[in-house]
Amino acid sequence: MSSRTQQLTSGTALSPDGTVIAYNRSGSGPAIVLVHGGMTDKSHPTLAAVADALAPWFTVFNYDRRGRGESSDSQPYAVAREIEDLAAVIAAAGGSAMVFGGSSGAGLALDAVAGNPAISRLVVWEPPYHVDGSAPDLPDDFADQLSALVADGRRGDAVALFMTAAAEVPSEAVAAMRADPSWAGVEAVAHTLAYEAAVMGPGNALPTARLAAVAQPILVLTGGNSPEWMVNAGKAVAAAVPRAVHRVLDGQMHNVAAAALIPELLGFFMIAEADT
Image (cartoon, rainbow, N blue to C red; front, side, top):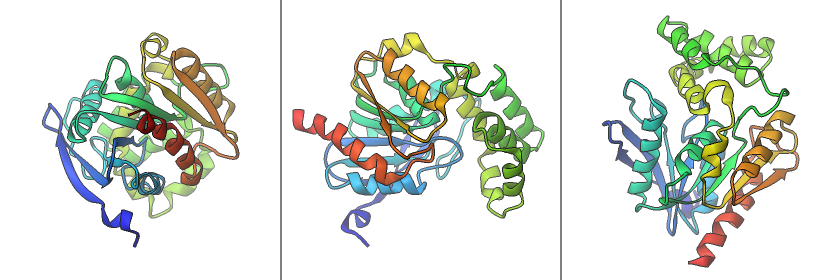
């Protein structure tokens, strides 16, 4: 076991609506908060590896978004409450932090960053906005459809709908997944898929005006082997944010490898450390 892993501790932050947000803390130095995407939590191997790699230089807060992992949940859901959750973790980190967000977690971080000086720098991995005809065609009531399936006790059908419609997983592959014992764990977070759809907004439309108001430096990363629409979304985010840079990671797909992310995060976040 490495010395960095031994430094990992657990903690909680209290969101204004009473939701308890659980996080792992590791390392020392300026704070970095990691925001995971859909169908996962802070235990995702990529996030754990990223936290471990950053820990020698930064204090890393890797948290469970509400309704996932060890965090609690409160109803009714609203994206504004998730932004408050992130703010609560940043407050626990000392009131200021750099942030990394992946997939719909990138969308959440981009929602939170505009006009928010508590977030000093941001890296996003493949925020799944739909900016051209190559992207999946999602109905404006996609979040409501997912919520309705869960409310009817059809959690597996909600996951299948999300996977096929939003993540473009072939229906045959989803059918095979449903036969695997691991499917029960996926169904356990089915209620949060409507949260992901709400974060991305109707049709996953690019929030151009909100992005134009972002003043912080942002690094937008996409994978060289990802679908064309995801790369185009990254380019569109970088074009909309005044101080953004877009980079393509060769050979990477949406399920990005930690080894590809780590050098990018270290380089971008180390710039801020050198400036202090």
